[in-house]
Length: 443
Image (cartoon, rainbow, N blue to C red; front, side, top):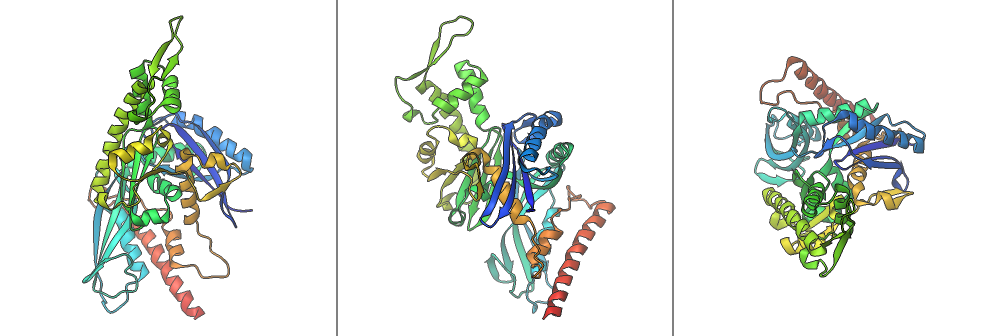
């Protein structure tokens, strides 16, 4: 039986669950489900019980479709408090005449998970940027070079520890083992960005219900990420208040008649709303509705452009802006962004997986879940019986359960935690030693 992988996207407006397998034709989604979200605010679990009321039926639905219970899952994490910063690590080598090895580079990378962060935070991801080996600057891969010192530059992505704990508690309360937490913008990029876009430079903007996630790529390297604490829901709320309608009506008006570009909204056209309690029907012009939406969308775009400027790559994004998420379906969003920024823009749907129900899986609301599925499969180790595992596979296996950092405020870790980290590092290098020893024997 083929190995199945399940992923859970806990969004502000909806929860999406997927189960997939790896086939000869690629990654295939064999079961999917989504439901309106409860108990999640701006990407963070705030009410465990209401999250379970949504999640448990979805997991049961996946089990009915596949015949296999969901025992473990990859889960996305985002939230308004996710941020990134640049850090460096310097390592003096004892033997400058020895080639820089893969284990040296990976041990430096692993140590970055113990970077100093604010109290109540933890490092979620570490992404290498460049390396300096003696006088050689800006190397992307220093393995195989010679030198007396290595300086590595990283982007570390930081989130609230309590957010991760709340997510883990919700998943495990549903009877599912949390296999891995994945930063949602990184996962979404796996599903919607082309390799050429990542190389040329691109800003991915995922407009969700409660938050807007931003990820900047250049030269195939993640350069910046940020989360803006508002998204499509705040536009719906503006319509509700401005037009004095119910939330259901406001959401329907936004999707069916809304435009975020007032210049493109039709003139002399109105929406007729039925009267309440015997009152007369009333009209709301398309122009008035567009005026409300454009004002808020302009604010969101200003925040997006600020984060792009903060990345330092605003003038190097040749591929422009790629939009995804439910909020990207807002009317006239692409021409509005082109007009406001002067950058190219497109709406991206998830790709990279196949499904019997491709119409649903290819919807923009599935971008994050599909990206997590691709990420999960690429992280799974498939040790074949007829070949020696590579160093990449060894490191993936040993570091699959990332050690949590204890010294969040820069103080020394507790003795028990320090011992745990030593065990992880010890396992890492014993695996490496075993790898080289077995390779020598085969030779």
